[in-house]
Amino acid sequence: MKKHIALLIVGLFSFSSLANAKDDVSDYSIQDALNTEQAKLKLGSDIEFYFGTQPHGKIVKELGEFKTNKKTNAFNKTDLESCQWVFLSAMIALKDRAVKEGGNAVVDIKSNYKNNLTTSNATFQCGAGTFVSGVALTGKVVKLK
Image (cartoon, rainbow, N blue to C red; front, side, top):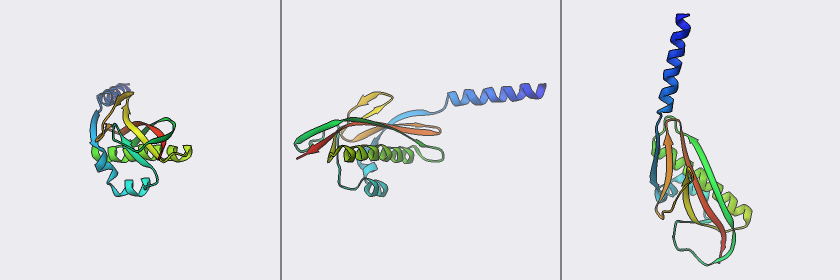
């Protein structure tokens, strides 16, 4: 009986430490993330990306606004590594949507982590936890002239 109580107490302490687990939301450089070899390889050059209020060509056709919400395993990775990796996953989702919709660009890309919409031309937001990191983006798929 004492053994069961001891196990129960250990279990409760384990869950309480998880409740206090890390959940840091930070800004990371878009350019640094896009300059990785993986990003260049996976994103290619067929679809153009414009963040925040970056100027772009004339929009010929708007094809819709789309959201991504990606997570990745952060275990045994630095926050920077896991955030750049999950950012790439979110960007691939936007690229795939642009291709599917017949667009050639995604404009007005904003961070939308935990439904907190933030606009930046230079940074994206990433939530880095003990075990999982996440990036959520929203952007308009368009056809540029």
